[in-house]
Image 1 (tube, rainbow, N blue to C red):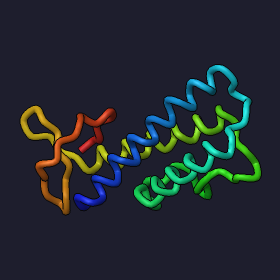
Image 2 (cartoon, one colour):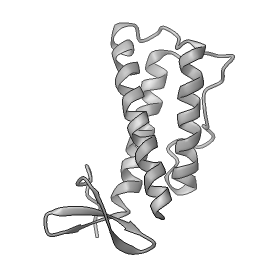
Image 3 (tube, rainbow, N blue to C red):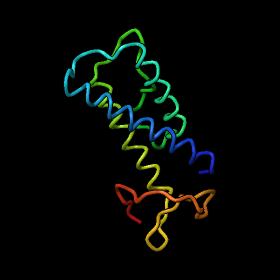
Length: 126
């Protein structure tokens, strides 16, 4: 990964987490209600950005790129997809960070950087 990739990753991950939280609240109240077109436009924009980060190795669902605007997904559909994307983003992150002493850092161009990050939620087996 490059420093630009890390910046893009962190932005997309935080946006997805925010959307996941908001749609998750709606999903608990009304799981089968459709997401409106206004929200869906932004949901799809974030998913397309996530797809460009995750690439083939980390993409969560074969053949899925974004929701169809003509067939509005339900709140629970969106939370299901977000959960898959967040898990795959975390896998990508955990594969590209390293620990020095008690701190975690991004690996940039194969080398430990000075860009701090949090501990991976799921540590990879080395």
